[in-house]
Figure 1 (cartoon, rainbow, N blue to C red):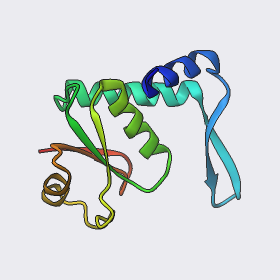
Figure 2: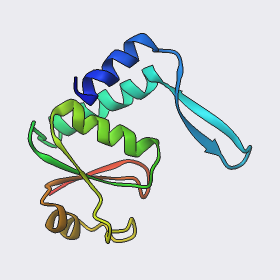
Figure 3: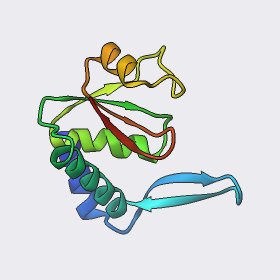
Length: 123
């Protein structure tokens, strides 16, 4: 069973249950996205990657992000497409994520970053 299949199964089974939590630094409380909300975000991004960016199964997608909800959405969108998820190289920081550096280092032509919200960049 693939990670994509596991995610789809969990989304159907636990649609309204909390899935990922993010700590709100103002209130010091966790805010959760449900399995269903997460799945819809994944499907939406996967659609954008395929329809607007031309990503196909087997393509490489670099996800450059701190560990947060947007990172998970981008990673699972790549799994949904059948694209190869490429982790951020150790020496590449969020501050240094130019298209040239990313594509040269990882061999990708699409990258997703969360420096200023989730953005998809294509070369």
